[in-house]
Length: 83
Image 1 (cartoon, rainbow, N blue to C red):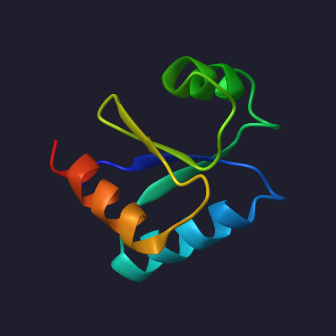
Image 2: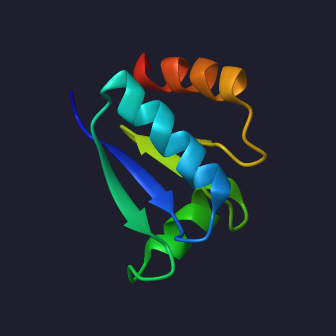
């Protein structure tokens, strides 16, 4: 499985929750801190229309876990991985 690009910040609680789900499910990801990685913030803003973390990218498709809701996140994650 190709790795998910997982756009985060160090201070984001929603990012920590999303990371737990990814780890529990054994889904490989590359964590990218949008405040430390040049160009990462611009990718998120271009994809989502605003600065929102966590944002996940897989094969050119994006979802976010803003205002984290586990069941919603898991549903959207499954849809993202099946595109």
